[in-house]
Image 1 (cartoon, one colour):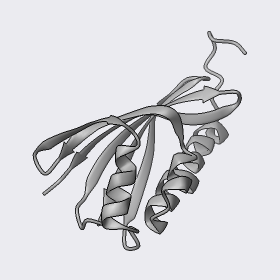
Image 2 (image 1 turned 45 degrees about the vertical axis):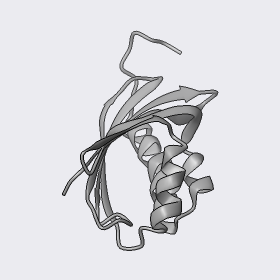
Image 3 (image 1 turned 135 degrees about the vertical axis):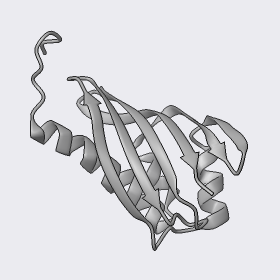
Image 4 (image 1 turned 90 degrees about the vertical axis):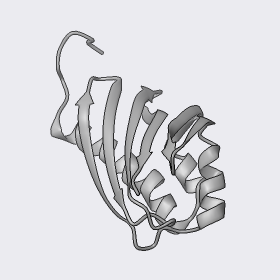
Length: 128
């Protein structure tokens, strides 16, 4: 693999979007944390503001949210791959009408490990 050439294709961007759609978003819509976790590295972190207080630490905090609020059946989303290299990607996800009834903006940092994209960091902001 060359680290000096921009060899990203549209298919590469679509692959990253598909990972987010089929794991994180589908799992959130269904209220299925195990499916959500297929998108994340086991050591992934999560930081962001929710109703004025900071949530920080392990991505396992997301399990508490899903357990508390359940499926996000009416949620709509938009995914934008903001930046990409052969081994890294930054994605912005707009989420409207999540399970708690709020809207969010997420930023996910992904790394390609053993040929598979995994989220290693989730930053988020919850809107009033």
